Length: 484
Image 1 (cartoon, rainbow, N blue to C red):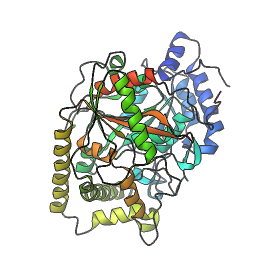
Image 2: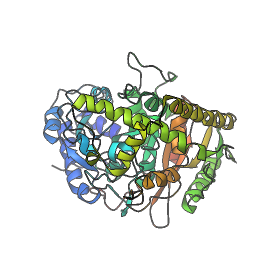
Image 3: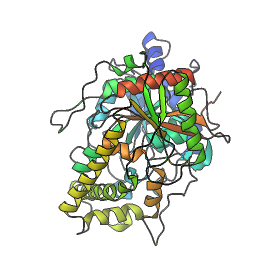
Image 4: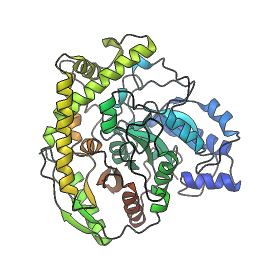
């Protein structure tokens, strides 16, 4: 049953309608299901549904939280397992994997009052900046169906862009929240490392502690902030804890950011030319920030970004091989080549190689720390670093495909596409992709704002100011559900 929501209603707005009795959680759920059924055939964002479970859940009683009664989508990987619902990480190896209990982040979502009703698409084990898994097929960009929606949270971003839901779970270990947010024209915040306690803290230990952040993609800044308020925080036994924020993040969105010192870069730390539209997007954002009273200066860090690829590959392939070995023990299933995509299998083999010794692994971590030190010195005089989110606009589907004779070809292309986001996973800083720019062809291009370690509040203050100055919620792709 379709319902009519006020134009621009976000998740907090939906929750308010439920609270006042203007709509019920069940009505919101049925509306969201209709939106998925309408828009998903074009974009393939949702690859698994749990409608009956959600319908039973929506009838209540629901917890009293900031998002009581709001329909929500979970990524089919990461820390958001849902008891009794398949969780595959888009891999044939895990196609029969069914968690026996909710993941810790799922429990926090449920406590916030959310009603999960489906799973979104991702690349196998979230390893690519595009969402084109063999198991489920590609997620298409809502603005141009021949282009990539980004990855690894491409299904989530496409679902939000097409207005299936106002926000969806996402995770980021190299740009996986920010890249799809950029490609699909939505807002994506990667929180500070371990701001949300990771369910995978015991898997691929050094890799996961170094780079993984879980959160969401959203239409509105305030939804993103309120969701982080609801889900942030450590769990007993966490090896590290992010600094406690001075006030709720939702409150930060109502505060003046003050006069910020912003450095912006139009060159890649990899030495590879950036797409002209990405440069134009950054220059446009810099002018907007200057018009809002901020001190803006063009400046780039003097670091060798090309030094990131080798150590990051060692650490990520080692972490993946460790993950797969642990999954073999848990499932009793042997990891064999035919159960994985070529690039994934090549990474597993690299991680298992006798050349990936403990010494090599630790050397890689030390090399990454040197990059962290260099970037910290560059950013010390500034409040925010502004860059393109990606090295190019959304590429065509197939751009990151593996070559049978060279299975890592796509991974190398991915490295060139991610000159900024992966580095910020290694530093652990909060960063956001903000949809401020569209090309002449109508393709969104995100701009990437990096904040001080532990200070998402500063970014939320700036994001809310940018959203007010140049609202984006009214820009709707042609594939959106009930776009009018």
